[in-house]
Image 1 (spheres, each protein chain N blue to C red):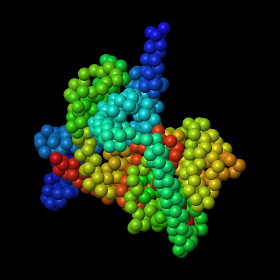
Image 2: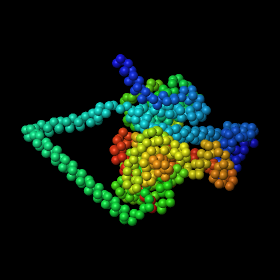
Image 3: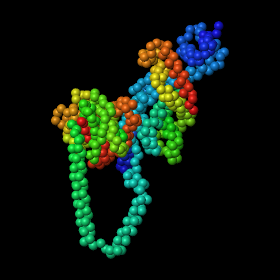
Image 4: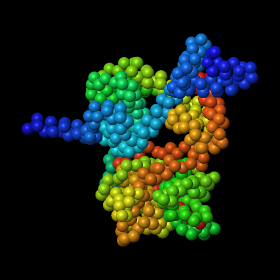
Length: 206
Length: 384
C-alpha cells in the first residue's frame, strides 16, 4: 500500500515538471526533414518542444530566463547549420543532443562570467560534446559580429544596397528604383564603392 | 591577346583612376563567379588568374567575403524567426513551474539562520533581564500595555486620516489652479522612464495631455506614437520634474490569457482611483474579432486605457470602455497589439531602445498587495 502511494507521488511530480516537454514533441526525423525543407512549422515545433528543458537547466544553475533564451537559440542554430550542411548524424535522441550542447555552452559561459561553482545540476541525460563542435560555431559568431558592425559603420544608403543586392538577391533594377538612381551605371558604381568600403571596414577590425 | 580584364587594368593605370580599376575588376570577378561569362572570355580570365597572383587572390577573397555576407544575412533572418517563436512562449509561467524550490522554511533558514540565532539569543537575554528586574509580570501591567497600544493605534489612525484630508485639499488646490482638463482616463507605465500606454480614443483630438500619479502629482506629457486601428496610444512624460519610476513590477504577456481567468484592473473612473476585479469571458471581441478580449468587469469611461492584469499580475490587455455596448459586457485590447505597437515606435522618436521589464514581482501576492504595488505605475490621463 505505502509502496503504491510513493510511486504515484513520484510520477505526479514528474508530470508537473515535464508536462511541457511532452506536449506534441515532434519526432526527430520530422525536425530534420523540416529544417531541410525550410518548414516554419517544424522549426516552431522544435523550438517550443525543448525550450522548457533548457530553461529548467539554466534557471536552476545560476542563470535567468534571458540566459536560457540566448543559450537555447545558439544550440538551435548549431543544430540548424549542421543539418543544412549535411553533416548531422543522429547518433542519439535529438533531445539529448540539444540538452548536451546547451549544457556545454552554459558551462563555458558560467566559467567566463565566474559564476561556475564547480558542479551543475542536471535534469536530463547528456553526451560529451567535443570542443570543436562549439568552437567552429564560435568562430563564425565572431565573423558575423564583425560583419554586423562593419555594416553599421557603413551607414545608409550603402548598408541597404549591400543587403538588398548580396543578401536578398534583389536585382540592380529594383535597387535603382528604390533609391531613385536615374541610370543603372550610377547605381552600379555606387554599389561597388559601397562594397569596397564594406570590405575595408570589415578587414580593419581586429 | 590577354583577357579583357587585364586590358582594363592596363588602360586604367594609364588614366590613373584607381577607383575605376577596382570597380571594374570587381565587376569582372562577379561575372566570373556568377558564371555569366562566355566560354572564351572565361578561359581568358582563368589564364589571367593563373598568371597574375594579385587577381587570383582578389577572386578568392571576393568569393569568401560574399559568402560570409550571405551567411550573415541568413543568420540574421534565422535569429528573427527564432525570436518570433520565442515571443509566443509564456516564459514566466514556465519558469515558475520549472524552478526547483526548496521548502520555504528551509530556504528562510538557509538565508537567515545567523540573524535568527542572534535575534533569539538577544531575546532570551532580554527576557531574563526583565524577569530579574521586575520579579514577575503582573496581569495588571499587561493589560495596561495593551490599552496603551490601542491608544497609540487610535492616534496613528487619526494622524493618517488628517494626512488624507490634507492630501485631498492639496489635490483640490492643484486642480483648481489652472488645470482645466476636459476629460480623464487611465494610462499605465510601460517603462520606468515615463512611457505610458493608453487608448487612442482618449487622446484623439487632444490639444495637450498630462498624467497624474497616485500621489496626485501632475506631469506634462506628449503623445509619442499612436495606432488608431488598434486604439492604442503611447505617451511620454516630458515634464522636467519627473523622476524615473522604480522597476515596473508587472510583465507583458503576448500569449492569449486563459478563458475564465480571474483578472483585474486599476484605474481612474470619474477621476478617482479604483480597483476592479473581473473575469476573462472570451478570447474574441465583438463579432469574433481577435483584437479584443471580452471581459466581465464593471468598468466605466474613465477606465479607458487601464492595465488588464491576469491573476499572476501579467498585463494581458488594455481596458477599452469605448467598445462597451451591453450592460456588463466590456472589451480589452490584447497585450499582443500593445507589444507590437511598442516595437513599431519609430526609433528616431525615442532616446533609448524600449526595454520592457521581464521580471514579474507581483506574482504570488494577494490582490491587496498587488494593487498597492502596482498603483504607483498607473496614471490618470488628463486631456485638454
